[in-house]
Image (cartoon, rainbow, N blue to C red; front, side, top):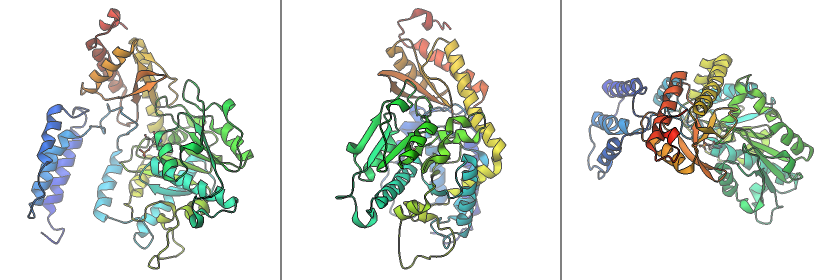
Length: 466
Ligand SMILES: Cc1ncc(COP(=O)(O)O)c(C=O)c1O
């Protein structure tokens, strides 16, 4: 095994493979072909006895791995809400990989400590949050929501005279959790991880867009955590945040906003109204790896109650430095962390306010275009396209299901499926900065071709009507 970093050829290989990959992203099949997936069996080796050749390791990854990737960095991947990657962020990540920083504390990385402080300030400004808001840089919104709810649990119980860190949840005063019945699955997971259990959740009915119905919001109190959603995974709709937060504040309840992809609407003046009221929430979660197109994994929890978050994440050790510097681990569940803030800093520093508006507003424009062109082609668009999500169906369920399957295997584009109001539907999530108006038109053509392949009971549509 070599003990230095002098093998420049190894890094040149990695760079060459990465550049080849990026150059082909425009035309590579959006989902890997069956042959590429079958070739993954080459990885089913026994653990080698001896040390191999590092060049061979990379060559194997490129040869077998690259073709079997989901091409989500191109402009025609619309699955989940995955986003692409802004080039400067990817390049910064490559640099940061060489640094291999541990962002846990100032002592382990003064650079990360400083950048986290800077980005925390930028996020506060961008989202219009109060000056006392702190940020924890986490892997994604699942952990951001977990962290926000942990802060809520600490504070609400502390107010009731119960130190949860000391006394745990056994025999603690009961807390209530109120959320829309379309809250993301990661919310339920965070609730379970925190030991609340689903039995304490009061689910508020939602409207035809998946928004929490404010007229059905129960009365809240100082033992309640209200969880709102900025961006429904199917429709992109936003809960009535301003009205609901106002109710929570009157009752001294805690409000958490899950804004995994939707919070970034605040970065675009033309969409910012959707997020009105977030400035009054106690905690929020957002994913830069979704709408902002940083590389994975890049989430953030924002909390206006610094002490509650820090107490919830408390971690002591005689060997740990206590100083006046920002120690990122004070606001995250993890101790050791990679320097994900580098990519977020690079993206925000590069795009600036105008670039973020262009990016986020552009996703909305492409989504609207998708909706219009699909409608013109005879598809049913089931949602109001207020942000980046388009929910689509054909005239009958079997055609919807068959069309989705054909789209997914077309290689031209990829979308996920869901069930909406008891019927199958296709989810289009426009979340890549790369997607152009031409891409959208090409994908609509792929939808029409996919529908024509399916055994539709409606012959006029089969012939490409609309
Ligand atoms: C609304 C919402 N909340 C939470 C999450 C979970 O985010 P992550 O996958 O980054 O943990 C998602 C993921 O798609 C989401 O759309």
